[in-house]
Length: 276
Image (cartoon, rainbow, N blue to C red; front, side, top):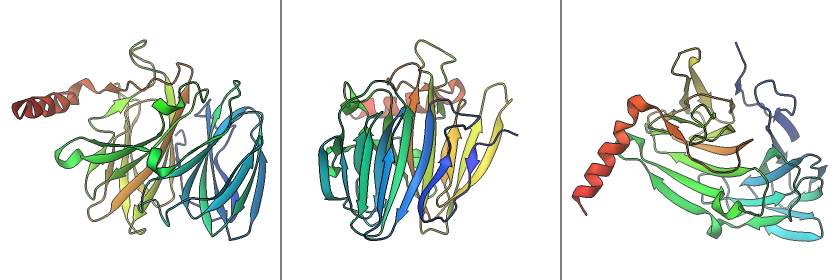
């Protein structure tokens, strides 16, 4: 069976979770920094552009002559919107933890070099999507605002209410129905509140050559190369996941909904129309 689920591991410093030689993904790599106050980290980006999403704590960071000091405004992902620093390919960055800090290191292959920049919490675009038991809150971090500022990467966060679904109705973006459907890989990184909770990650294709369900827990990560991938939070537990994408078809997000479940969106539109 192809490995797509990466279980959480407690490790200080930097840990590579989904590596550059991952057999499933061609464009994406993912790691995480776990630093104590005062610890420093220096890295080169080589052939990857990098989005550093501060999951918790405060950091200072410099790259390419730019510097941001004591940035980060939440103690956990469930306490507000993210601060994110973009570092282009063929660059170097220096990071110092101003408090205990956890930072997601989201990497996408790139060969166009841009300028480093920061996305502050007030710049994150908040979307409330779905209805009934598939209502969720989606935060766009580097999406539309990345045009002409990044090469391939798209980044955001999703918050599932307890017992609710997201990435729902089920959608995919593996290029099967090109050109309407983009060809993009994706990585999910999950966190739960309270931490001992769990969620369920479904993953399937219409021909059922992939037809899997995974229990996902705090700190797990998932690699999506193709197929539909809806997520559900366990009852009583809020589920969060960081998501980022890249691929060969550009940065347009136009997911393809499973035709069997597309009616759910149509029903939502009819109900909304009745109140207009």
